[in-house]
Length: 311
Picture 1 (tube, rainbow, N blue to C red):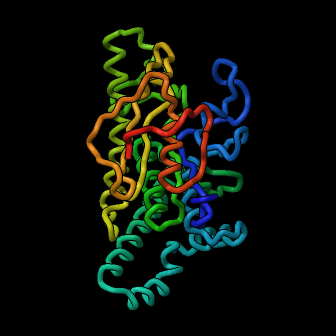
Picture 2: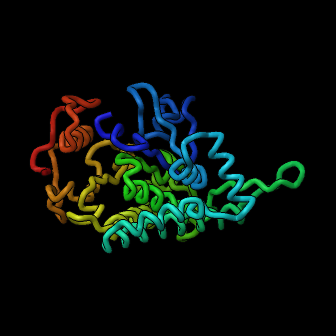
Picture 3: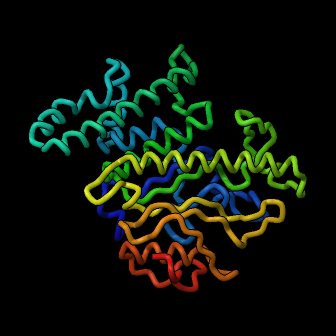
């Protein structure tokens, strides 16, 4: 709890695909390993949330499950935003702030309002009808790109408001066979990853990779747009993008392509390509990051030491 204990939420776990936390999914391993990248202990996974509505209520509710449900009911009944309940206090606070802080408050409230409006739109579009004609909003956009960006925006907003300083976001589960029809790839991702060096399949895999990286770039752009006293939110963060496999065709777990974004408060030069000796565990990078934020951990998983030359 070196970091998590300083914020309302110790961490935030998001995703776009639900996944089982038990059972065999791949090579005899538990499904938890393919659907989770956050763990409470060595053996206890932390399930991710994929429903934007539930994430929003968690971040901006009042923390009491009963009161949150009541608040949610009242907002639906009177068509009032969560901001409507706090706008009077916000206006009072704004009068006590300097011009720069007033601008930051306006930006924050606008961001919350925009996200709530987008969620409401998808609630309405994807609502189902239960017994008695009651409409039940699912809150999950059918458009995959919009789903990713909506979840990204809430993660960025949580960082902006210092609701949490630690988050994980899985665009898709390991081994996902999601179709990418919207970008011209109707086949499943997992099927395409076993390309057998077929040029046509490799091109489709490239399109999927490009799509995913563009969503990551979107999140970074949002973080970079949030200005802080000593740089941007992105400047003061450490963000990792990548996966646990380098070649799906052969299931290789070496030479992983990992993107490291953010400057950790100005201590990391950007625009560099660093390579490390074959066999260097990815956990060495995690260990180095923990050391950077003052978490005294000597080993993590299969780590063999901290990375040299990163900071």
